[in-house]
Image (cartoon, helix red, strand yellow):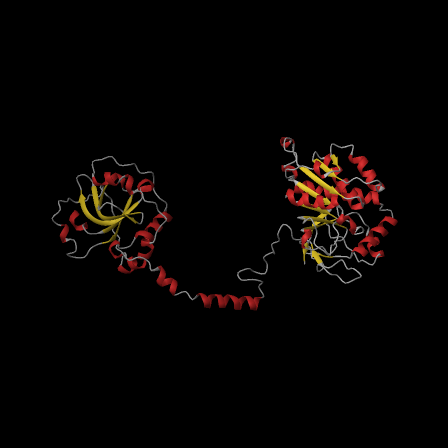
Length: 467
């Protein structure tokens, strides 16, 4: 009789379209060829509806997982049921022991490999008269065995409590695990934790993969005591030299062919490149900003350092910078200054000899070439004091080219200073010190007692930092 199967736990395979259902048989109708399951599970996930009904045409395979004992299905006796014919559902008996259910309970409760599909047809499962999807075919034998192992459990014995993550995490002894890892690394000689020996070393884009000799940062030595040292961005040490040694170095270089004219040209190019960078570089000097030409005031004295400033002004004027050159009138000028003025007059730069002709509004940059250590009396001249007062009043940033070392406070505080060859022991009033390569050969340094190795790298002007 059909009532004999009430309360049995069955597994119904409805094909690929509907999947596999498990539950306890609550009703069997031979007339409509239908079977109902209470507390159903669909593909291992509990359904949202309390009961589902299947037609015989939807069932591909039916397995009885557990048959209730005597008296266990008496509460289903009041239901109106009929016998299940052999052509109706086509079920086959198969009894499953209690140990089988207990053994696979965890697999059923934690199964996540199936998607929930009961929502799309749960409403139709309650009403047997509605149309149901057609079956798409049979599963192979492997899938059937997996279904039996995954869903052959008692649905009433699934635990409702959540997993205790904190309690299980407290059982993990992190200190003991890391101590075990450290012990293994010390025995095996691993370089770092979790990294095996065969893993290749990773290099940055600026690191050399070839092994080289240890880096020597002090590659320049001078024959006298160093009062101040500088260092480059790469860490190379650049010692300062005295004014006498610096003057001797330039004299020996001139004797070997590095004439004053060459030195003036190289100094003018390097100083103008630095000035163009300070003025904004390509962001300021481009065809779109032709209406905002930078203005540079050049303060020069009647000496070689003033000639260096004039050379710098000529190169700036050639790069579309508005240059105003201040040079006081003298009856007799040095030949180097006369030659530089002749070239400067061919540019669009403006030369003035009176401070009244200098702009009253702030300029973009002031280049200071007023001082000369060989003629300290210039600092007492009225034009010198007036030029210093104008520079301090203009409040524009100041770049000093080849500044001397003053025992007393300078009149103009520079923001940047450009030294030639090797720096002098400049003080705080010199601002940030830069070093310019004027092309002195290495053997010339050795001739004056300086062990020299170029710190410039790929540049001609580099910044120096106080060591």
